[in-house]
Image (cartoon, rainbow, N blue to C red):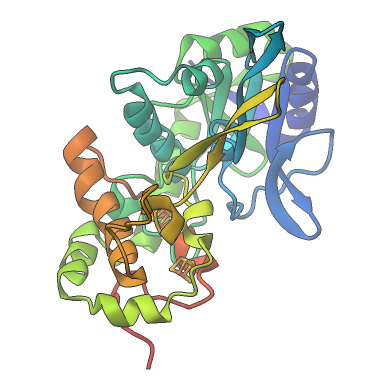
Length: 327
Ligand code: SF4
Ligand code: SF4
């Protein structure tokens, strides 16, 4: 299905959806765009937030279940995912969701991830104004939304062209026909033209093969000394998903899944104190190999979508395309 959503109707549509589920959308907080619970604020759709929307599928602190102890016997309380709609997800971040789906979908299925995933409606936004540092096209992750989204929007000036990608998307259009008007072939042609221009802007971006060649040649000891060990590159990455499990509370409490990162020494250190990846250079190399070799070997998709967030957040200014050391 293809329809037009006049921009004046966008807030009305989100308000209507907000009665049934939590609406998450990019808004401005302290001057910067962030994905957050939408309460009627103006939307900040001009640039992709530094923290990806994956925070709503794989939160930094995820309560897996609660436990209650009574006379030495434990009972467990499952935490249910609430219905949610994430609006304005860029194609790179949608591709990253596809990667997470494959990783968490491998046997044994990760139920807490999929409980949340199944109760989340994804509304993608085609990327017509790529930013410096974006390489989605070379990574097969943009600038057009792929089939993963439930609804796909393209900004055509006064209106959004809205296309459905799943039964959940069709249901939203059927339940709220008052907000939409008919689309024509001309609108489709306009979308194609806008995406062609966006694709041209992305031409020349770094490709995975360039990074793989740089991994082979890099001086990892020197890069390890340049790295400040802040973990920032991992926590802004829409695909990084390392975690640790902790129980908080005795005798009653919660089992938490907290995000962790293989780039910091504590992640690979074993109980005996032995660490198979002793130096920061080894850990940094492992981080790159995971994205460009291990994840592709395991699930058939790259572990990077070229969103550029790791470069934007790196205080040590490690050049992730050339992997050359700052002098
Ligand atoms: S590795 Fe960097 S460019 Fe690739 S998906 Fe993660 S944050 Fe984006
Ligand atoms: S963001 Fe840069 S400095 Fe921080 S851990 Fe990653 S590579 Fe090192």
